[in-house]
Length: 351
Image 1 (cartoon, rainbow, N blue to C red):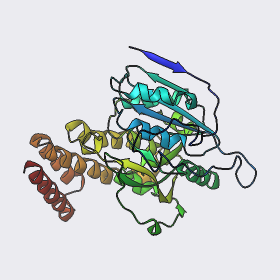
Image 2: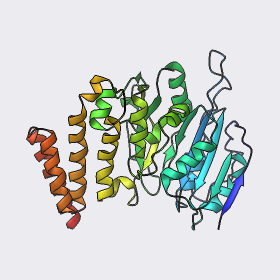
Image 3: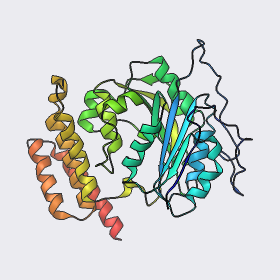
């Protein structure tokens, strides 16, 4: 059944805790009985905060999505547009979304072609200057949107800002972290050459990205299922550098169904795909072109580790060979260390 509800396209200030429905019985703390500090209507110099559009792609995440929704709505941010793109869930997801309908710019529940397609549909609906997608099982930390937006205002030459993250489990219990170990400093990290060679772009769930640059980069590649975030962010980093805030801004939920715990040939191939996409771009600077072999080593090394964990030994051997080929037979200590680590993890899983 196709269910679509379109509400006001205008942005609005985040609601308060008193505005929202009461939390389920037994739910306390952030974002159930606590809220972010309200952000002033204007930045200290009198200017306006940039409008932020958050898109939540969802499918059958009813056990987590209410916590995700509340963590966005309770940010206390003065100019937020929140969109939920559900893929036709058959659990309690739609019922939960309807509870928060008054504070959503748009939501729909209909079949789609996967998470990347849902993100793109939300992106095309959005009107904010800054954009990100917020997974339906993750939880924003208090005031994380304002923290990221302030960093972008301070460094307008950046293409996106990302912060650190902390983990929560199925029940929302936080894995301990030491707040004093973070400096709150802003730096231009990762450096573009490092980001390309390692295929690491920063923690996407803790990002705010220039919507204009996402669109110019070709939006989210709907053929990718696992690393569409790194693909977009790396292409943006080639145009404008990322900045990093040394403080956690997102709780990333760890549970058996998350993509980062899935090992298969598709996941193995996707880093190779994005590496080839980068080096097929026109007018790459020489400093980036020189990284091609190193980047392919990174991609094939991840691929063979993924295939070994999936017990796909034919593809494991192929990508292992390509790792050796592109690294000219060097880096054996690192390669054998990775091989030993993966073999141990496979043996533990078998037990």
